[in-house]
Each structure stands twice: as C-alpha cells, then as structure tokens.
Amino acid sequence: MTQATLTDADPYADFRAELRQFAEQQCPEELKQFVRSNQKITRNEYRIWQEKLFARGWAAPNWPVSQGGTGWDLQQRYLFEEITAQADCPPQYHHGLGHIGPVILHFGTPEQKARFLPRILDGSEWWCQGYSEPGAGSDLASLKTSAVRDGDHYVINGQKIWTSHAQEADMMYTLVRTSTEGRKQAGISLLLVPMNTPGIEVRPIPTIDHWHHVNEVFLNDVRVPCENLVGEEGGGWKCAKFLLDRERLSPATVPRLARLAEQVEQLLAERRGSGPALPSHHVLQERLYLVQAGVKGAREMLLSAIQEEMQGTLAASKSSALKLFCSELSQQIIGIALDIAGNEYASRLVEGVGATGDVDLQRELVHTYLFYRSRTIAGGTSEVQKNVIARDLFGA
Ligand SMILES: Cc1cc2nc3c(=O)[nH]c(=O)nc-3n(C[C@H](O)[C@H](O)[C@H](O)COP(=O)(O)OP(=O)(O)OC[C@H]3O[C@@H](n4cnc5c(N)ncnc54)[C@H](O)[C@@H]3O)c2cc1C
Image (cartoon, rainbow, N blue to C red):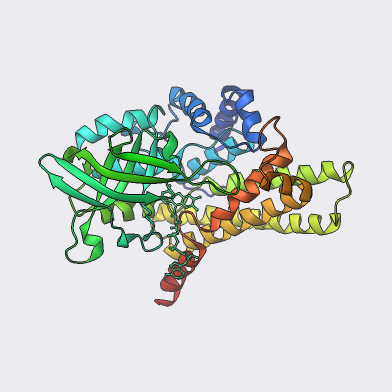
C-alpha cells in the first residue's frame, strides 16, 4: 500500500470496489432502512452488522492483524467509514472496539486479552464507559468513586453518571480512586467490571429526545477480582490518556455528517413540492449550501489530519478543532432538518406524542435534533476543546 493521498490517481481503487460490494451485498436491507430512517440504533442493530463484519474478517478496522483486526491504515479506515456510511450501513459500536479494546491490547495481561478481546470482535459482549461522575466531568481527575483492596478483590463504592448504553452493557470499564495520596491523577486505576455484579444499580436519565441513552450507575460494595485491574494500580490515568490520544481522531464522524446533509437536501427537495409551505425556502437552501461547504471542508481537514497522524506529526489543536467544528456542524445540519419538519413535529415530540408507531423520517430527524444538543458536550465540551487549542497554539 502506497502513502499517496486520496486525491491522487486512486491507489485504493480495488479496495473501494471491495468495500462497496460488501456494503451492497452483506448489509441486510431492513438494517439499511433502519439507519436511513434515522431511528435510534440499539445493541441489536449494531450486533447484526458486527457479525457480518466479523464473518468477513473486518470486525476491527483499528486493530492489528495479529489480534484479529484488519491492520488497515487510517486512510483505509476512512474509506471504510465513508463507503459504509454512503450505503446506510450502521456505524460500529465504539466502546469495545475503539475504546477499551485498544487499551487492553496495549496494557492488558495475556489472560485479559484472551478473556475480553474475542467477545468484542464478534460483538457478543458489550461495554460501557464509567468515567464521569456528578462532580467530575471536564475535570475527570477529581473523580471520587473508590476501590479498596480486600484480599484478591477490589470493593468499589461510588456513583457514575451519563453512562451511555449501561442499560444494555455486559461490562463497564471504569476509572476509580485507589489512593488519595499525591497528585489526584496518580491515585486513579482502571477496572473492568461485569455489569451483573451484585451492588450495581443502573437508573435511566430521561432526556428530551425520548430515547434512552444515558444512565446513572450506582456502585455499592461491588466486588471485582484484582485480575480485572488494567495496568498497574494507580496507572489508570495513563490508560485513560492513551485511549484519548488514540481516539481523538475518529474517521467515522465526517462520513456520517455527509450522509445526513444529503438526506436533509433530499428532504428539502421533496418538501418543496408538497405539504404546508415552508417558511423561507431560499433561506433553508442557503443554509444547506453553507453546511455542505462545511462538510467538504471537514473532510479535507480530516484527510490532512489522517496524513499527519500517520506521520506522527498531528497537533492536538487540529484534532480538537475538528471535534469542535464537527459538533457544531452536526447541530447546524440537523437544525435545517428541524425547520423543514416544522413546528408541528417538534411540539408533538416534545409532548411525547408520536414517539411510537410507524417510522417517519421527519419525526426521527426531530429526535436526532434533540439528541444532537449533546454533541457539543459528550466526548469533551466545546469549551474544553477551545482550551486544548489555546494551550497548543499559545502555550496558555
Ligand atoms: C449524551 C452524552 C453521553 C455521554 N456518555 C458518557 C459515557 O458513556 N461515559 C462517561 O463517562 N461520560 C459520558 N458523558 C459525560 C461527558 O463526558 C461529560 O458530560 C463532559 O465531559 C462534561 O462534563 P460535565 O457534564 O460534568 O460538565 P462540566 O465539566 O461540569 O462542565 C459544565 C460547563 O462548564 C464548562 N467548563 C468546564 N470546565 C471548563 C474549563 N476548564 N474551561 C472552560 N469551560 C469549562 C463546560 O464546557 C460546560 O459548559 C456523556 C455526556 C453526554 C451529554
């Protein structure tokens, strides 16, 4: 594989063709319809697609071949994301494959690798991330959930919050405090916790989109074997940073935004000729042009960041700028969809009426609009991204 850019005569032509054929033939039509209609993807839809990818040997685009991954470079991973997004295949579930999987690959014991990695690959075991707490989000190192050693177990007490998919997960990777001595980062450890351990209570957090994403997770005298400690005791912050450094550049976001912008364009064209008159078609069209330009710009920036990442020269400010820009862009795109759908859809959804029944793209886009309010918070708020950019550029 050469290191040519994607805009050169295409060295990836065969690879693209293979991906397209796979996406066309192997992703079931009902699943594509589900994704196309913007419904909330749950464990079931992720699992169906993961099983197809696993059978093809493409379960883990970001893992080395020796561990069951594809060994693809970042450009190939981008093409995979772009082509599968265009074909309305679901995204892959990131908590296992993108987050804890690479951490176990790097820091895990041979037993941990043998126990956990195969089930991430085939999609049979699901993970959630127990990092944030009521008093520790942006300032994660302030976390207080404690783990105290008792023989060959840790006993965990505390509370996690905003834990996505905890209600569907088999396992949680969680940061806990094993010491209050020294720098607050130094007393943090990373534990792998089976969600069926006695003492764990998952409570849903209702959100305005009426979808169930996030939860509170209470841990009361939860006993976890010491063999579930990843890395050294007190080495959890290193694992957490490793995860953030590797995953700060996600090739998946931009292709999904591009597909969403296409859908919104199509919706605007359809609504032009039917239904109640749109308030200001030309204004919507102009906004659409601007977000389309934004998507194209984000794609170029992502591709150049990918090149730099492959050469080891990517600056933290660039990946934070991309995260910041794409979060805001996603809200702008879906804001156009909301204005096309109109007040009637929005108010019906907020009142909770119409949240069930037949699938209706405009209604699902309103769900997505409401969910996307969280885009500028989850995975690091926009203000925190601006801090990273300022520190990197100005040494602030
Ligand atoms: C939909 C969703 C899913 C999530 N999923 C998970 C998950 O699966 N697992 C998990 O562990 N967490 C998850 N989170 C939590 C997420 O990581 C935190 O919400 C995020 O890090 C912000 O932390 P916080 O909510 O405590 O807000 P805070 O950190 O309290 O921030 C409050 C406000 O102050 C601003 N602020 C804070 N510090 C600074 C600063 N230094 N400079 C300038 N402004 C600042 C923030 O930008 C924000 O506007 C999720 C959140 C959401 C919304």
